[in-house]
Amino acid sequence: MIVDFHTHIFPPSFRAARGEYVGRDITFAALFANPKAGLATVEELIDAMDEARVDMAVVMGVGWTDRDTAIEANDYIIRSVDRFPTRLVGFCSVNPAWGESAIREVERCAGEGVKGIGELHPDTQGFDVGSKEVMSPLMEAAHGLGLIVLTHSSEPVGHLYPGKGRTTPDKLYAFARNFPENTIVCAHWGGGLPFYGLMPEVAGETKNVYYDTAASPFLYSQGIFSTVVGLNGPDRILFGTDFPLIRHPRLLQQVEESTISDEARKKILGGNARALLTI
View 1 (cartoon, rainbow, N blue to C red):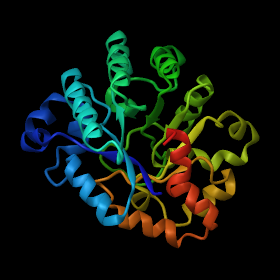
View 2: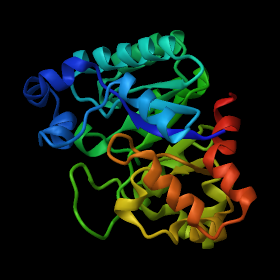
View 3: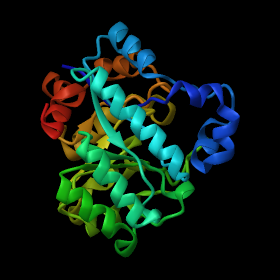
View 4: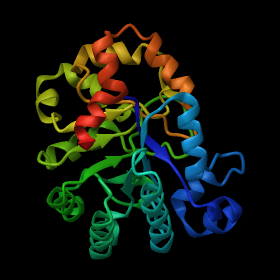
């Protein structure tokens, strides 16, 4: 089974009225103000999955700053999972800075069957992911509800791109250390956090952290797979595309052509996700 752990879908209205949503939400503007930036509906995702023979996908929004937009996007994800229950797993997105209203929205979405929170975008959402005080209410709620938390991650070096931000490995390391009982997914290879797996203290304090491969071809050469497997093993790497930014065949080719073992490849492509999501 192949599971894409990182995809984004949006209601058709978001594409039809892109300019309106750009004006309403800071994160949406950072990522999608350019008319060429792709927005996909659930039907388009399912078609792409069928074409690439991807079995299941985690669907999520982005780190919303506007509450009404977040609720609209979360509702669309819930409806989409209801339509395609054997193909999709839903995550909801909120802003930890909203306080109690964020917790209420998470509880509402959990009651509708979502299995995680994400994607968070700390920079555009205006919160410090490394602050225990800031993150405790959301993380306690997530732990109590059995929800995974997925956050955007930023490389401290390299080229700039829309939405890159500054959620760098030092902040993500603090996040993981603050909440060892939570299951955390750091997107985009954790901005390079797994490279520090050679440090015993980092390896020991990030055992609750998984890394997805979202947008990998835009960030790293194919050697990233064998490098991270060599440093940390294959058990906490999750195949994720960042669809529609990256289409499945491109990233699947990277995984298939990597020098990792067949056992590691199977875990990354779906085995780890199935265990994490209990599907």
